[in-house]
Length: 166
Image (cartoon, rainbow, N blue to C red):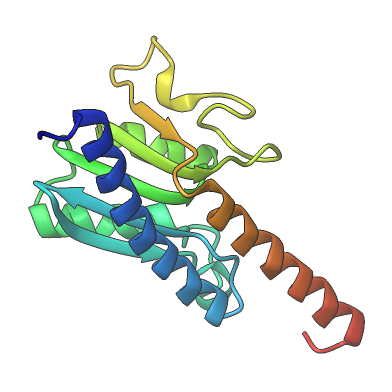
Protein backbone atom coordinates (compact mmCIF):
# COMPACT_ATOMS: atom_id res chain seq x y z
CA UNK A 1 0.00 0.00 0.00
CA UNK A 2 1.34 3.43 -0.94
CA UNK A 3 1.70 6.01 1.81
CA UNK A 4 -0.24 9.21 1.55
CA UNK A 5 1.99 12.04 0.23
CA UNK A 6 1.08 14.20 3.26
CA UNK A 7 2.27 11.42 5.59
CA UNK A 8 5.55 11.11 3.65
CA UNK A 9 6.04 14.87 3.77
CA UNK A 10 5.35 14.91 7.52
CA UNK A 11 7.92 12.15 8.11
CA UNK A 12 10.46 14.09 6.07
CA UNK A 13 9.73 17.25 8.08
CA UNK A 14 10.26 15.35 11.34
CA UNK A 15 13.54 13.86 10.10
CA UNK A 16 15.02 17.24 9.21
CA UNK A 17 13.57 19.06 12.23
CA UNK A 18 15.34 16.53 14.46
CA UNK A 19 18.57 17.58 12.74
CA UNK A 20 17.75 21.24 13.41
CA UNK A 21 17.11 20.36 17.07
CA UNK A 22 20.54 18.73 17.18
CA UNK A 23 22.02 22.02 15.97
CA UNK A 24 20.05 23.93 18.61
CA UNK A 25 21.57 21.73 21.31
CA UNK A 26 25.02 22.84 20.14
CA UNK A 27 23.99 26.44 20.76
CA UNK A 28 22.76 25.57 24.25
CA UNK A 29 26.09 23.84 24.93
CA UNK A 30 27.77 27.18 24.19
CA UNK A 31 25.31 29.04 26.48
CA UNK A 32 23.56 30.55 23.47
CA UNK A 33 19.78 30.44 23.01
CA UNK A 34 19.07 26.98 21.53
CA UNK A 35 17.97 27.69 17.99
CA UNK A 36 19.03 25.41 15.17
CA UNK A 37 18.57 25.30 11.43
CA UNK A 38 19.23 23.00 8.49
CA UNK A 39 18.81 23.70 4.78
CA UNK A 40 17.89 20.85 2.48
CA UNK A 41 18.44 20.70 -1.29
CA UNK A 42 17.34 17.67 -3.36
CA UNK A 43 16.62 15.74 -0.16
CA UNK A 44 20.18 16.31 1.13
CA UNK A 45 21.24 18.58 3.98
CA UNK A 46 23.59 21.14 2.45
CA UNK A 47 23.94 23.48 5.43
CA UNK A 48 23.57 23.54 9.17
CA UNK A 49 23.56 26.46 11.56
CA UNK A 50 22.95 27.26 15.18
CA UNK A 51 22.66 30.43 17.20
CA UNK A 52 26.12 31.84 17.97
CA UNK A 53 25.33 35.40 19.03
CA UNK A 54 26.96 35.19 22.45
CA UNK A 55 29.82 33.02 21.28
CA UNK A 56 30.69 35.22 18.28
CA UNK A 57 29.65 38.49 19.98
CA UNK A 58 27.54 39.62 17.02
CA UNK A 59 23.85 40.25 16.44
CA UNK A 60 24.13 38.63 13.01
CA UNK A 61 25.03 35.11 14.18
CA UNK A 62 21.50 33.67 14.10
CA UNK A 63 21.04 30.02 13.12
CA UNK A 64 19.27 30.91 9.87
CA UNK A 65 21.93 33.41 8.78
CA UNK A 66 24.72 30.93 9.52
CA UNK A 67 22.94 28.24 7.48
CA UNK A 68 22.09 30.57 4.57
CA UNK A 69 25.76 31.59 4.28
CA UNK A 70 26.86 27.94 4.19
CA UNK A 71 24.14 26.90 1.71
CA UNK A 72 25.00 29.77 -0.63
CA UNK A 73 28.65 28.80 -0.54
CA UNK A 74 27.78 25.12 -1.15
CA UNK A 75 25.56 25.93 -4.16
CA UNK A 76 27.81 28.78 -5.30
CA UNK A 77 24.76 31.03 -5.58
CA UNK A 78 22.97 33.52 -3.36
CA UNK A 79 19.66 32.18 -4.66
CA UNK A 80 18.50 29.12 -2.72
CA UNK A 81 15.48 28.56 -4.94
CA UNK A 82 15.26 24.77 -4.64
CA UNK A 83 15.86 24.57 -0.90
CA UNK A 84 13.79 24.03 2.22
CA UNK A 85 14.80 25.53 5.55
CA UNK A 86 14.02 23.79 8.82
CA UNK A 87 14.31 25.99 11.90
CA UNK A 88 13.42 25.25 15.52
CA UNK A 89 12.05 28.75 16.29
CA UNK A 90 10.06 31.15 14.15
CA UNK A 91 12.47 33.53 12.38
CA UNK A 92 12.93 37.13 13.55
CA UNK A 93 12.63 40.10 11.18
CA UNK A 94 16.29 39.91 10.13
CA UNK A 95 16.18 36.19 9.36
CA UNK A 96 12.76 36.38 7.67
CA UNK A 97 14.14 39.14 5.44
CA UNK A 98 17.21 37.05 4.62
CA UNK A 99 14.98 34.07 3.75
CA UNK A 100 13.00 36.24 1.31
CA UNK A 101 16.21 37.70 -0.14
CA UNK A 102 17.70 34.20 -0.60
CA UNK A 103 14.53 33.14 -2.46
CA UNK A 104 14.04 30.09 -0.22
CA UNK A 105 10.66 28.69 -1.28
CA UNK A 106 9.73 26.81 1.91
CA UNK A 107 10.39 27.15 5.64
CA UNK A 108 9.39 24.54 8.22
CA UNK A 109 9.16 25.92 11.75
CA UNK A 110 9.25 24.05 15.06
CA UNK A 111 7.67 26.54 17.46
CA UNK A 112 6.37 30.04 17.11
CA UNK A 113 7.79 33.14 18.81
CA UNK A 114 4.95 35.42 19.96
CA UNK A 115 7.39 38.11 21.19
CA UNK A 116 9.62 38.43 18.11
CA UNK A 117 8.44 36.09 15.35
CA UNK A 118 8.09 37.44 11.83
CA UNK A 119 6.63 34.41 10.07
CA UNK A 120 3.12 34.90 11.39
CA UNK A 121 3.27 35.83 15.09
CA UNK A 122 3.86 39.61 14.95
CA UNK A 123 4.03 40.02 11.19
CA UNK A 124 4.56 37.60 8.32
CA UNK A 125 7.47 38.95 6.30
CA UNK A 126 7.55 35.63 4.42
CA UNK A 127 4.18 36.31 2.80
CA UNK A 128 4.03 39.99 1.92
CA UNK A 129 2.49 40.15 -1.57
CA UNK A 130 4.34 43.37 -2.46
CA UNK A 131 7.69 41.58 -2.21
CA UNK A 132 8.94 39.74 -5.28
CA UNK A 133 9.12 36.45 -3.35
CA UNK A 134 6.77 34.69 -0.93
CA UNK A 135 7.56 31.63 1.15
CA UNK A 136 5.45 28.58 1.91
CA UNK A 137 5.45 28.07 5.70
CA UNK A 138 4.74 24.90 7.65
CA UNK A 139 4.41 25.46 11.39
CA UNK A 140 4.41 23.24 14.46
CA UNK A 141 6.75 20.40 13.43
CA UNK A 142 8.02 18.85 16.69
CA UNK A 143 6.62 21.96 18.34
CA UNK A 144 6.59 20.60 21.88
CA UNK A 145 10.19 19.45 21.74
CA UNK A 146 11.37 22.77 20.28
CA UNK A 147 9.38 24.81 22.79
CA UNK A 148 10.48 22.73 25.79
CA UNK A 149 14.13 23.08 24.78
CA UNK A 150 13.79 26.89 24.87
CA UNK A 151 11.82 26.90 28.14
CA UNK A 152 14.43 24.65 29.79
CA UNK A 153 17.25 26.89 28.56
CA UNK A 154 15.66 30.08 29.91
CA UNK A 155 14.82 28.37 33.22
CA UNK A 156 18.49 27.36 33.49
CA UNK A 157 19.64 30.87 32.52
CA UNK A 158 17.43 32.49 35.18
CA UNK A 159 18.82 30.06 37.73
CA UNK A 160 22.39 30.91 36.70
CA UNK A 161 21.73 34.64 37.00
CA UNK A 162 20.00 34.18 40.36
CA UNK A 163 23.02 32.25 41.64
CA UNK A 164 25.47 34.75 40.10
CA UNK A 165 27.07 32.08 37.92
CA UNK A 166 26.79 33.82 34.56
